[in-house]
Length: 324
Image (cartoon, rainbow, N blue to C red; front, side, top):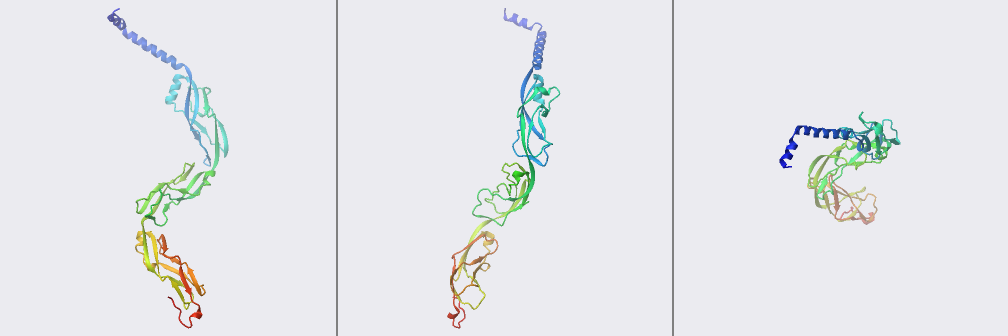
């Protein structure tokens, strides 16, 4: 048979042949769609109506695995358009552990499916542990990123607004929280007044915080160091007639703090106090009490102690007391 005769045979009554082929295909699809089979579904699990006074203190499965038997057409439609979900009503829950058997009743099935053709495979039982919910107020502390640079000073205490937040959750968790810390604040290369809103670090723990962000205000300054020389001590004494000798006559004090404070300090603002009110005649090595203006962060003297000799009245022989 030649090629032309083959083509002629195929094209005779071609419309009827095409209709016949399409009808056969539709008939095959219809028959196939009515065949019943089992299919597995992974359905989102929803816990509904949990009492406000209770909370679950452990991880809960997010999905339920089920097997559904039905016609292929219904199962395909269910998979594409059904939006299945499994809802467990917990409105009657009480404190403690409860085991809830899971069945087809938790699924939002269409009327086309018989609940008897639905089987919950995993988990078959939902085990939940309920605990009492409490709320307590805890202070907030500021956390810094890395170490604070040596040339940076945080003036005073940072202001946290609000300085306390309400923590709500399971009693076993919340009762152990004494404070919360902010997300880390980077102060490197910054100067002057800073106002920044930061979230709180929860560390993955299962509780809620209100508010979950705070405002941190602080003032940063450049660190400065300065030495003041020839500062004399001040003696504290009840009897002005007491004679004494002391060494050294003056000391140097090194102060450290914010640059704008340190550069304006003068010697007269610093007091180096030596208390001899209760001392009897003799030689002593006394550590002074040092008082500096507000804002100075650190200070140190170039000596550890003064050597002081208090003279006995008999040695004076009518002379006035001497300080030399």
